[in-house]
Image (cartoon, rainbow, N blue to C red):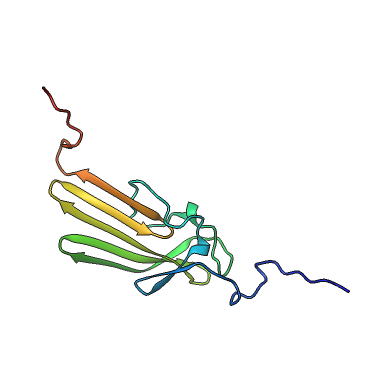
Amino acid sequence: MRRLSLSSREVSSSRKLRRNFSVNCVAMCGDCVEKEYPNRGNICLENGSFLLNFIGCAVCSKRDFMLITNKSLKEEDGEEIVTYDHLCRNCHHVIARHEYTFSIMDEFQEYTMLCLLCGKAEDTISILPDDPRQMTLLF
């Protein structure tokens, strides 16, 4: 009698438990990334993909470059908001929804990024020639 064993890749995709998230009615896949929402410090990407965090598509099992689709730019109350989707180049599986914001508050430019694949980050830069946060008090 011969025993059959199935690897996890051979099991029907409908029977697999996937880590899916939904943001603004767009499903995102936690199985395609090494780490969900990695902390990227002050690296805010307006476009592109953080490929080092991409382990491969959970649907077609390929690790290739991604497509960027549904890119939009909105302006709300002086804030620019860029959103787009990261898709698998081979099967068009939605991997993540990317959101990048830019605004000017007082004397600073503020940037934020939030994406399952690219991570979360914030940055603030002075628009003045000399950053007031870097100035030392002279007594």
